[in-house]
Amino acid sequence: MKITYTGRKVDLAPAQWKRIEEQAAKLGKLLDGKDEREAHVIVGFERGRHTAEITVNYHNHPLVGEGSNQEIFTAIHSAIGKLEKQAIKVRAKWRDNKRAPREQVAEPVTAAEPAPPGKNGSKRVYRVDNNQRHKPMTLDEAVLEMEKDHDYLVYRDAGNDRLSVLMRRRDGHFDLVEC
Image (cartoon, rainbow, N blue to C red; front, side):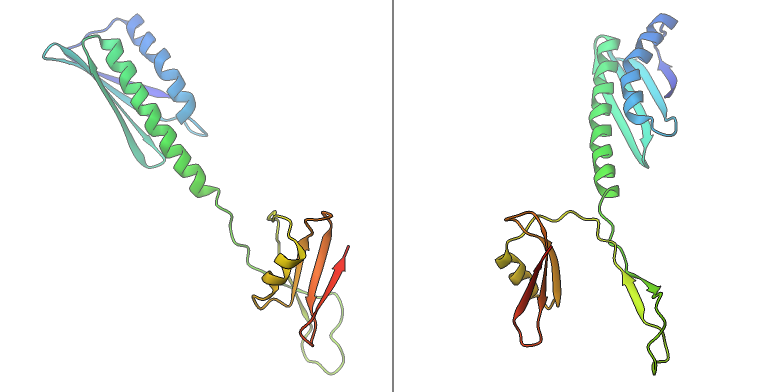
């Protein structure tokens, strides 16, 4: 994390700036990912109180932590603590939004078999990638799911944890194939 300092009516020794950098190291581990973030620290002294303001741009969100106290290091530590809370909140929102499952569109794949005689085009096979883990179902739950205009349903049976296929017959009844 790159840190730039601005001091208003405050002069600190290099050892004191080093102590501030050590406090900001934890924040740097939280914010720095693939690229290095830049933080701007403004330290001031007004009306007998030290103020500290830290600004960081994180995932297009400006994070600002402000703290004030009679002691300068307490003010800076307070500002870093507030900034950490904001960063954790933004990071959680970013992670949850970016990790939402994407819907996969079935893409046509031409069949390896030649077209049957009398037809112009070849048959198309649509590959649906379904890597989602679904909870096991009972037979009654599978029948209820079939009432949503599905012709077949592949599910994991809750009783024996085996793969089962439920198919709708032309007469309205169902065939169950247990694998």
